[in-house]
Image 1 (cartoon, rainbow, N blue to C red):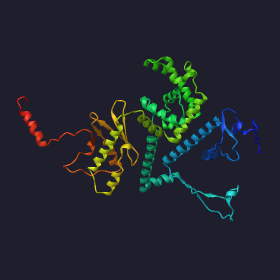
Image 2 (cartoon, rainbow, N blue to C red; image 1 turned 60 degrees about the vertical axis):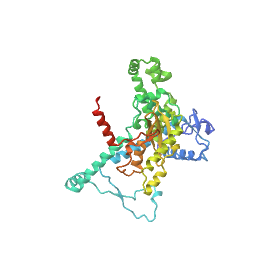
Image 3 (cartoon, rainbow, N blue to C red; image 1 turned 135 degrees about the vertical axis):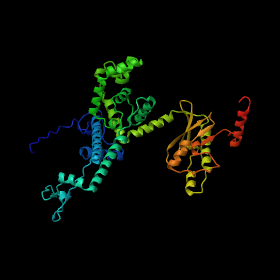
Image 4 (cartoon, one colour; image 1 turned 180 degrees about the vertical axis):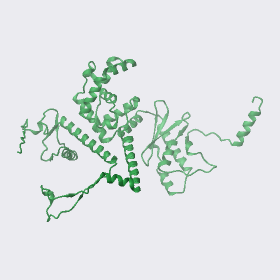
Length: 438
């Protein structure tokens, strides 16, 4: 047909569950559909959008798919999403005007063109845009010149936002604890990540949102090549640190290639793990795992024996602080009712021995860190007060006779010292200066 010969290979088995329906492979296959209707529908939509194949779970339920095809679908989806994202970014940054096409209706006598293959009766009228006339008009017309300036400003702002926030977050290789927590959070979605895989991604600079989320098989090959070329550099670096040579090579090249790193390459399972990392970052964003790393840090902190009592005392003092600044305004009463209770104050001890508390704001669910200092006698909850003033409610200015400012807000668990008046202080300072020993 039209000089094209199509060759259809015979399926390797009469049982469609014994081979992959997309490549006929019989290695590492899994059922295509599961008992979850939502998951099946999502898979059908995914395959339809990526490879234009319509599947029906009821009719094609007895099917299987191999690991390689699952990996290729993930790669194709990542490639499509990346292309769409960057294409939209380029369109937003393009300083030239968009030329719109205007379709002129043609009398078709009730004919539906969606069912007609021949579109020769349709025609498009395009008004030509002469570049020279366009440029001259922009120079001569003051209004258009101002529009050009606004357009340029919008372009710069768009590019600035694109590069500054989305593509600049880096996993810190110099902070071992923070780095370890990040990978622990990522392993919850990706399963186990070998140490040498993690080190290879860090060493080759792939721990950015723009890179870690768009790793492909070709990227993996470049990582392998970089690791093979870095053998001498890594050996010298670890030798300077006094690390055992075998342990150093195990750290970067794993059990298989530690003794001949010049032939290093990832195993198929490790490649699947790397692609799973890319997929997880694409779906959730790297901020999701950086935030989870902070929660892991809080989980490993040591609990305090009298934590419930300190939490109750902290919640009480926060309420007393705002109660002393009571206002007749209705919004203050609504705010006061939502102040945190003891169950929303989690007391813990940091590795250096300092006692802190994470106060969960009931309004926005953000955690504010407060500290117990001065020999476990005072809670400083200025962070929580500042958070509330910025986002929820700002207390009124205190009278001159009154209380300490919010910047000195604290909770006292010990008996407060008696305050001296200014006159008494001056008299004491004079008596000291006039004494013989002074």
